[in-house]
Image 1 (cartoon, rainbow, N blue to C red):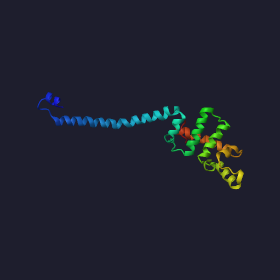
Image 2 (cartoon, one colour):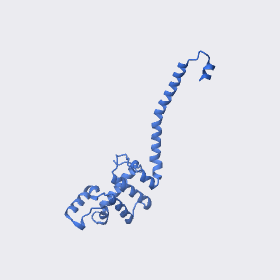
Image 3 (spheres, one colour):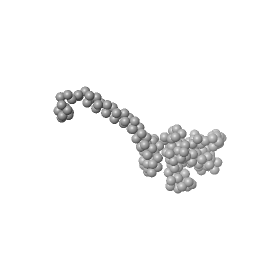
Image 4 (cartoon, rainbow, N blue to C red):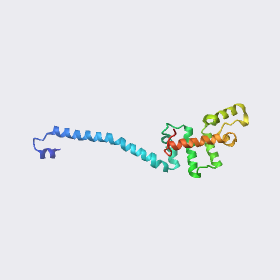
Length: 179
């Protein structure tokens, strides 16, 4: 600063210099305030649309909370678990998932304490509730594993698993949101 003052001479106006520096700093902060959200939005788009589809399973496991965001709102924990597992199985096997792979998915859902009577939809749910109310012991269906083994409820259970898959894909940006 002394070099500047000596070079400018004794009439150097320190107050004006400091005011100009303050204006430059204020302008820089204003530009940063406007640009940072745009940069963050761009990075978010890049991660959501480009990077996330290529991530491996271990990263999905650690970032499940981030992936629960969805254009139609937040997806349920059931849809996050079942949909993610169905999506991974489809990546491995294609559109038709083998019976033993579906059994593994059903076991994982059962271990997470999700019951079909709480997550089946519409008529399937009503039929299962009626079935369980009138059937006792061995015939009552309390797990997704049992529902997939039952000829009466297999279709409804599979429909719900594929619906969870659709919700999961919509949540991570693979397909358009439902109407």
